[in-house]
Length: 196
Image (cartoon, rainbow, N blue to C red):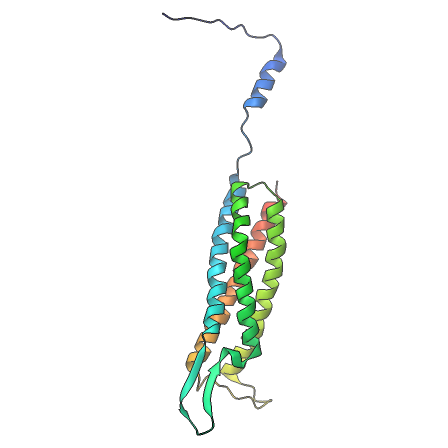
């Protein structure tokens, strides 16, 4: 038992065109989805480097094993206001990057949405500036700690406080890794916004 139904073809050419338009798929994510996934992965890396820089600097502390009756020789991040600024600023950068993850996920789900990308590119630029300023100021102090300044009679302290200097140098390097990743995030978001 089988039933055969004959369907006559229409002589109207517009009927077939409408059917083709209805059956066409939605815009696929394509390369914009790939950029969004890369954005999310880079944000995870920037979170690790910025929070790592902040924690490394905040835990930098060294006390020399000898002391006098009145003095104890200690180097700590809170002895330098620049390092305090560094710890707070990199913590803010890391906090922002954690809070930006949901917006990055939205760009993965909806790769053609321009609102979340524009929001992220503006805030990424602001926090890139903050990370660059705190990293550069801390790098200047770390340079002075390593080399001193003969003209100002500032002595290099890294000969005595080697562990402290190694930790602060590592924190500065980690902050510049976060700066480079934020720069890449801005470039990727600009590419995704620029091409339609």
